[in-house]
Length: 456
Ligand code: HEM
Image 1 (cartoon, rainbow, N blue to C red):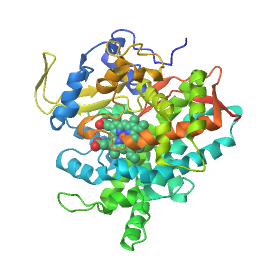
Image 2: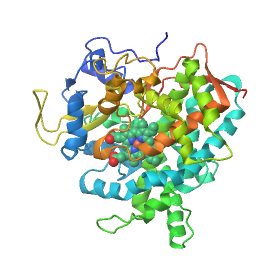
Image 3: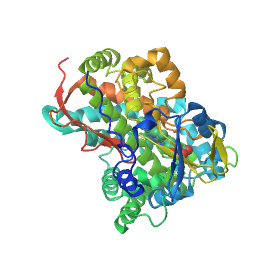
Image 4: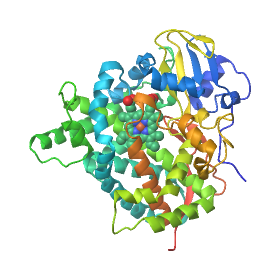
């Protein structure tokens, strides 16, 4: 049976310069194949010294046991600052802790229940939009999933659909920014030397400024509505009215703008990528697609939408999970060692980069059975269950775990089920998808599918 697409690994040793070039093109195919078997790999260049850790115990140490000893590098913050300011994604220490104390309650289980109807509405709108395109012509599906995930974010955060003028403008500007800004390429997450070409072009700064102006407008309007006592009860209101339990302080408008920028970026690119790969995999494996469609037809009653619908979409959940195993939307994360360490009997000097790679961990040949196969049923096996605990981290883990993980695990399976209930997805001959890592894992030339309506 054909396997899901996987980028070719880099053949053998290459010069530093070639590595840097490969790295800029695509961080995944720049890596050697041995990383799919190694517990740890050391990379030493004149500019950085890094350790990629696949050993589950090391990952535990870095992310869960001593996360404060392995913060994000300041250089990352500098790289992303034009767009993200001081958002929770890039801060460390006391500032970061305070931001999480305010943000986390908005994403807890109970609030998810309140957020669910807005996700559902975004799903209905997506099915309607795609209905006009479901005539069997080839369609680039990432653009579509990106649109629907952006819609979900605006509806849940600000109670506005993507058709709203400001929401639409933010979405359009982000797309332009991504095209113009390799600074949002994963390469930006490595603290390369300052002279390394970074394309912090004037244009990038300009689009970042424009995006922030639009978000400031949304946030300031919301602040005024809260003060006037007529704000809708959505995620933005929840976050802006939640005082820090330790100091009683609220986010001011400027601080909230930074958070909205990362909610939009982290929340829509990632979900869009996971949904697009899920659909591609279902097109590759039509048996699975039919099973998900049958489950959705049974489980979803469009007249009565409850949060509990989600518990009926178990196959959709397993497919979404398996898609994120094979194509983790955030393929790698980088931390910095703040002091000398000993990892697997090797000295890790202070200042080294610690690379955690869901991409390699999720396909690790010594941890997963048939690591490169698509098998959503694997999570019911002993191996699958064990790996889910110690070799699966699409949302990272520990104190810096993605605050949107519960949100994404509601949104993803729900939208997947709604889409597959309405349409049949098929591969387009001659247009196979090939994963590359930009900020998230995308198709090198997009992800192309044909859609037709399913006959009930
Ligand atoms: C399939 C969807 C998603 C995936 C795979 C994902 C994955 C991740 C990962 C791996 C991180 C950790 C990054 C790092 O430490 O370097 C992260 C952080 C984050 N995510 Fe998500 N995410 C998803 C959806 C969302 C959503 C829907 C939101 C919000 C609406 C969100 C908001 C954030 C924020 C604010 C952070 C920074 C947390 C911190 O550093 O403390 N994510 N996400």
